[in-house]
Amino acid sequence: MVVWTVVATDDSYVWETGGNELQEFSVSKTWNQLRNRASEQHWTQNIWFRGHIPRHAFTTWVAYQDRLPTRAKLVSWGMNISSACCLCSLVDENIDHLFLRCEISGTVWSYVMCRLGYSHRGFHSWNALSEWMRLRDSVVSLPLK
Image: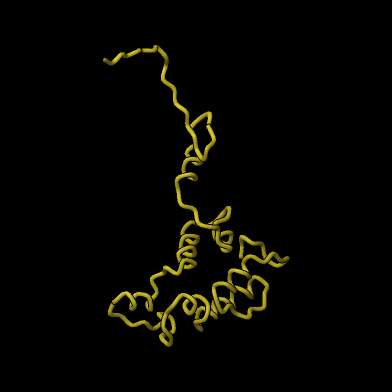
């Protein structure tokens, strides 16, 4: 025999994230609890800052992830195209060459650095560029870099 007892109480709910009871629902706290979060990379402050241009920041983020579809990468994916640099046609086009080591991009860097007031020595890798961008100096502000 089953006996049911009915209790007249109002239903209530409690929202909890990370073991903490919240007074009201928070999308940001819930999102931060649900998502997989990797450790922050040292270069994130170089691209995600107040006043960033979204298109530029996204492209730079993709480049730092080594996910830009350069010609060498497209060839490795099986595309039947030349892997030579689209600017100089001398070397395979990868991210380091295209943005930092190509003669043409080197000329652009020289003009930009001269205009900013630096004597340009060239960047040999994304890490070198990233370190330069993070350096605080009296010549140029960080957002302009």
